[in-house]
Amino acid sequence: MAWTWRFEKSDGTEVAPSVEPEEFSTQGDAESWIGEHWKSLCEGGADQVVLSEDATVIYGPMSLHAE
Image (cartoon, rainbow, N blue to C red; front, side, top):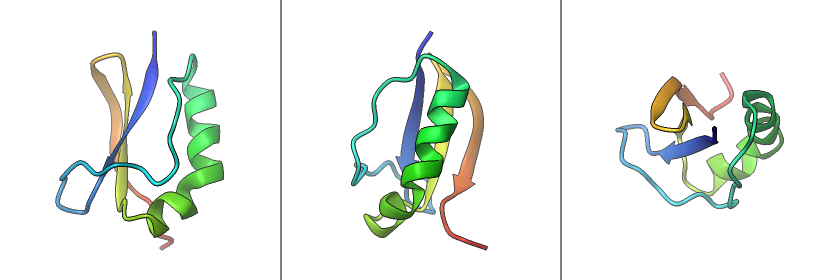
């Protein structure tokens, strides 16, 4: 199983991340990574992310903007 992030603009258009992620072996690892890099990703042009396990969307889109 591989956990991956999809990076999107607010309209759902996929964008390249400003920080290149890896494939994660657990959901916790993926969430820890996004917790460390969300600000740089947002500054690099991503507005939201979607977390998937293999081909299944787990949740998202989740905003990267501080509320």
